[in-house]
Image (cartoon, rainbow, N blue to C red; front, side, top):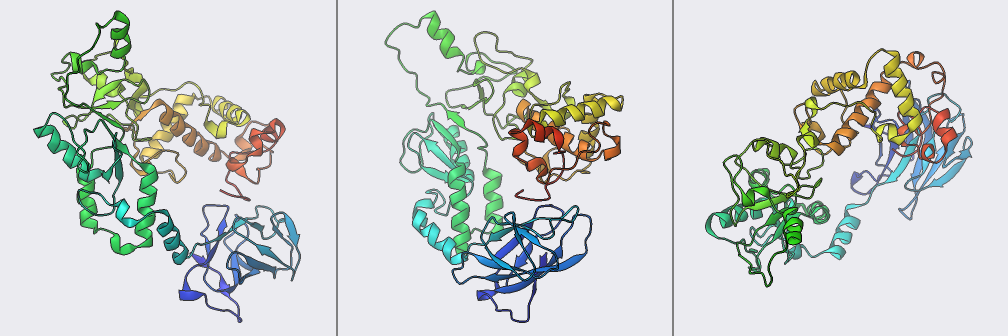
Length: 463
């Protein structure tokens, strides 16, 4: 991490903590951390060279919410698109865009970012929630990977409630809430409360569990997506079921609740998952190796499960997905560039299509080649738009949406691997857009989307 060099008149900030950063637009370069109240910045100014230059001095202002930047280079600099000449200064705040030498080719830009103090974080957390209200009533510690049960809406650690759920299923027809003893009908992970959980532990590190405790909890955790839990009751209907009732209700019921498939039939205490694609139900099972969740989005998908149950399909009476909707990446085929590719820029999609055709290859050839590179860990996964990016392999089951996102990600790497002189002649001389793939103008202006190359890294503005 490159830290700015302090000037002779430097003043130390309290506790020697980082109070601000300059975040470069190119991910290959490190943030410039600022620890002194007055510091001379010495960093790279172009993406084509690692040579460092002293180009500005940043002084922390007394309000602690802003700073003053002074140009000490021989060239002008841009601050929020306003030129600042040699020895001139200007006030900057969080989000200010700074370009060291706007006239130089391939110049790096930086974004100024103020870091919140630990004191302000603690104060904010105390206002938001009392720690006592963020504790699991099973282990009496701060939640870990918090889940919420319904209809009572009490919250627990994923591992704690998963173990409670397992034991309840073994001994009882219904699952009761450990806090209030209400019958639980539904349980799911609560991502909003999970963020609060993290903030609490950052504010008071004494509340953190040991690594061994966390590992044990994670080993118990079985709730990945929303679970529908049966109550074990046989409800009496007040009127006879009509054919329309049967057809409507069957779409939401699990086929294995009625009939045994693959040697398995649900009982009254079986927990069910609701497929995000067809909204149909399937039993949540830990006794099989067939995946029931997409690793890319953590949502439940039923295609692989019903395919494994001796090819059972839903027909007209039950909502189930085809095997094609959820299968390993290596077994998928593709014939059209996904709509999401190149940030949905149709001009860049057309360039990629022509590049592939120019090579005498098919889209499937290119995707298969880059899946192999992904599998061999030859690709930086930082921007992969999938959950658990480091765990994704060619054998991973993903849903259709996640596969399209993955292909779009791989086509970006395919394009930037192509030298400009190998692009179609009419686009080989286009200049790179300063904001690269992050450009918002490409979605509003057809001319800009066509005139500039957007399959590139940003060299100015936010990431």
